[in-house]
Amino acid sequence: MPSKPKSKKPSDRKPRKDKPCPICSRGIEYIDYKDLALLKPFLNERAKIKARRTSGACAACQKHLAAAVKNAREMALIPHSTR
Ligand SMILES: [Zn+2]
Figure 1: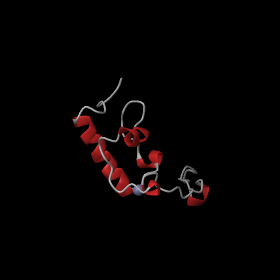
Figure 2: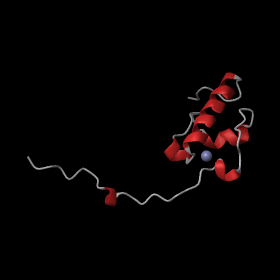
Figure 3: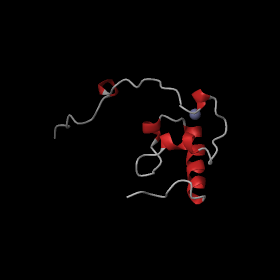
């Protein structure tokens, strides 16, 4: 059985530009859950946390960001979801 030509070789993929993490590049070392201006760009229109590949945040920032967003939801600063 011939192999399907579906598998993508690394050379077929778009070269990923090294975009700096938007939080690290701004010199923010603590993500405050009360800082909605900071959190808002990392939420989509349905108030869900954007994926790391979408937001461009590094692993450490994404982790702190998710915790901050969940905290903000608990404090009713951000809705759980919008339909
Ligand atoms: Zn970062």
